[in-house]
Structures are given as structure tokens and as C-alpha cells.
Length: 64
Image 1 (cartoon, rainbow, N blue to C red):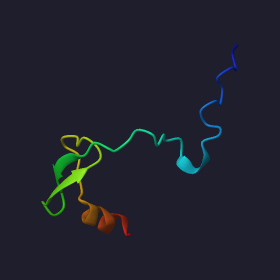
Image 2: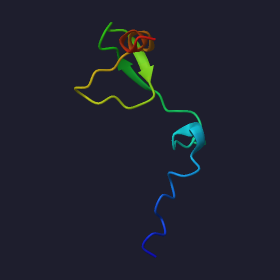
Image 3: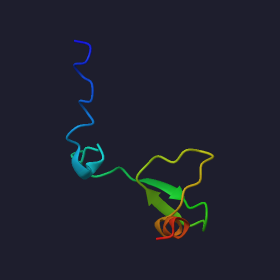
Image 4: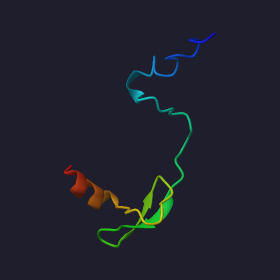
């Protein structure tokens, strides 16, 4: 029984990176961009003390 679950989740993940895609629409949370101060919505609950960026500022920071 020792090796029964070994590697079970990592195999067969395909190109999805192990994320399930059947959760439905994401819950969006209102936030203020740390760069430009504009109100935006993000797909995660912002953590106090960590910067949040709007889509445009995020793209600029990542170089897209």
C-alpha cells in the first residue's frame, strides 16, 4: 500500500498545469491598483500589504 498514491495527481495533467477548469466563473474582487490608483477587479481576494495591479499596469510590469 505504501506507493499506491505516488505520482497520481501529476500524471495525465496535460497542458492545464494541474488546474481544474470546471469551477465555473471566477469570483472577482474590487481593488485599487497600487501603481495608478485606478479601481479594478481581480480574480483573487487582495491581501493587505501586498500590491495589486490593474490589467494595464500588470502588463507594463511583466513586459507584455
